[in-house]
Length: 300
Image 1 (cartoon, one colour):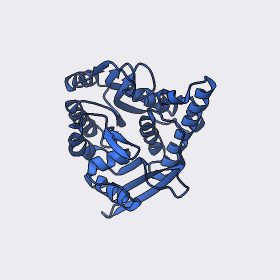
Image 2: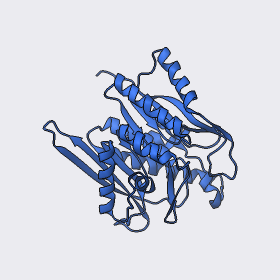
Image 3: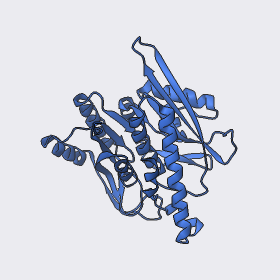
């Protein structure tokens, strides 16, 4: 049996010195699952921005272009996937689009996985934690070139201008996102009512494919997973990385890819809580707990 061909990912997202978000949450899990990962740090911060204080630098578009030019000059800019997450600069985001388009010209099979990190809901109220001028860049430039997007409910609402109050409205929003470009849309979390009760979280997925005769076929999935009684950072970054990995391994089965992604998430979060308790962290400190990624070996 021939060994599986090397699969290389260009991951453009945040870096923190302390903690596990962005590239620090995505790189190791992808490596564990057999991917080669080249990382560009959109920001380099001391810690994630949920702390009272944080310091660091934001990479601008010229600096991103310079890094990419270095790869091109050495002819090492061949990729199978591009993965993007948190950024704070509009020109940087526009440069990402230029890079993705160039890479797709080189490799028509390249898959761009975009986590449109903009904000979230707390106690039912949504708010953005990036500059508001990133929204039109995501909506008008980034999403149209993406193949897979992983917004949370609030981000899906921002991108479409539509509120999601029911599952029917969520499906309509996913159809709107399909129409903008991506074949695969996964709403990673929502505040919709789960059939299993209030202690469960709903994620929704949709995969739209055009068949040889031109007709479109759409696969819908719905997952309910237990809520974890703690607040974490980096979960969206880990989710997008795992979805990239498992859609690669199950390209025609979004249901299996999402089930394995959610399963990995549950194992990692439970293992993190177990470790936190063992070192006697107080409950109100858990929202600073790094994701402990060594549970991922369960899914190789």
